[in-house]
Image (cartoon, rainbow, N blue to C red; front, side, top):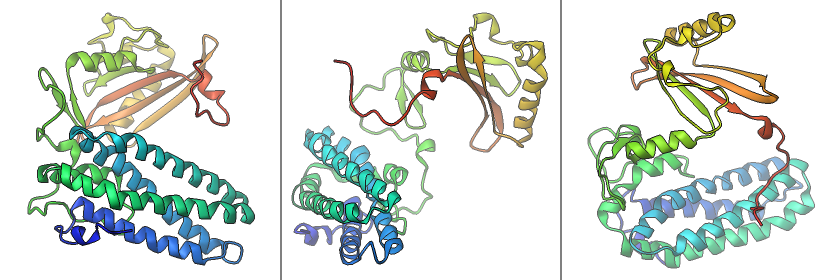
Amino acid sequence: MNSFLPTVEQLPESHPVKVYYEESALIQDLIMELTAIDPEAEFQKYFNIFNQLATIEKRFARKENQLFPYLEKHGWNGPSQGMWAFHDGIRDQFRAINGFNEAQDISKIKEALPLLISEIQRLMSIEDMRLFPNAMELLTEEDWKEFYEGDEEMGWMLAYKPAPYPAVEEAYIHPGEDTQERKLSFSLDNTYHYDEGYMTPEQVNLLLRFLPVDITYVDENDKVIFYNRGEDRVFKRSKGIIGREVKFCHPPKSVDMVIRIVDEFKAGTKDVAEFWIPFKGRMTHIRYFAIRDKDKKYRGVVEMSQDVTDIQKLEGQKRLLDWD
């Protein structure tokens, strides 16, 4: 393991691959500690180390959401399929051991840990021998320079936050404020830049239409400026509501409550209000959220309503597709 380390050590500080190898060193240390400890004699110490190792999920998320898409852009799709499945297998093992931890079933913990450790070590060996060397061959320096913003969104296992790469004098720009255009695999014609991507007006409209949630947006002047027209809205809306004052869009018995919600949102004393009511034989969840801009200035309120009848009935878990 770490046959690629001599090359990595020559990389500039905070290079994404170098950070991955700093995490690798941490993972190896945690594995050594986990192997040496007796969960029965020192359960709390074991439990703390195990939970620290479980933050490997952040590493998986960075690879899946950051590294793999760039590899796909350069024509290598293998990691997005095989290695992602490998991640999911390890995730399943962590979930199983978490169940054993809750029950403090020492015998099952001792039985499951060696396989988990073996699989993590196997994965790290593949990363070292194949994933990272190939990534260094395929990705350009410009590609690597684009990683930091997204990596920060996913997080790191490390106890410290790596410095931005490349090192910059100016302040780091949060992705939500980043308007720099990059090379993308789709056309930007007729698109607008949003916090985390680009969409055409048609795509935005389709997204809002197919969301399984009713949305109504009231601006800072208390005027209804938008609602989404889904096929199965809980509460019906019509074009006549656009431009209308919100206090005239609710039954008289609920107007006082609506006005209070808006007033509290404007004052900054509250940000969320929620209710659930039976409606036409179904359970409806209604939520109001204050909308504020980056300067925390009030910009309106969004009302979201959703039929949660079937959601309330969910129990246990479902992981398989049952279409057949």
